[in-house]
Image (cartoon, rainbow, N blue to C red; front, side):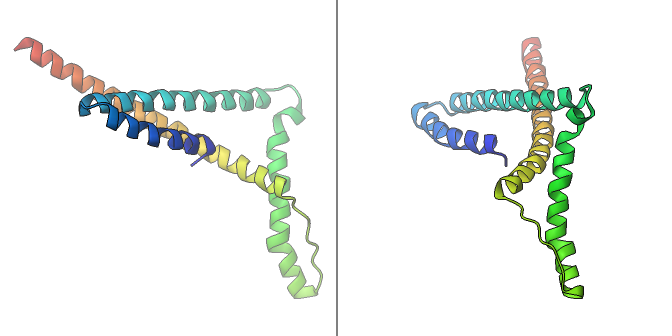
Length: 152
């Protein structure tokens, strides 16, 4: 779960509790909660789209460095991790020599954010699309029920 989702969950939990206490009609309370959740998902989707636009603009840039700095940074960080946890321990065990490279915590966090951000963005994108499909199916079902009721 990414930082945005955690923040939204921290807000919606207490907010939904207040709605449950303040609104006596359960159907209305559920409708309000669904509307709030829909707005929050749309907001999160806007953030993901903005991030995606930045990455796409960089990827479509004229300069080779502009297009590739993020992947290069991730490769360097992964190479340091591979050295420290795979290569250096084996070289040390076999030959008594193994160079460990310092990986400052901010770089570790950056790699975690880079990998997690990509995975989180893909997960959020898939989740939002699935949620929209469910909502569209519900709307079609409700429209169908209203049409049946009108014809009777």
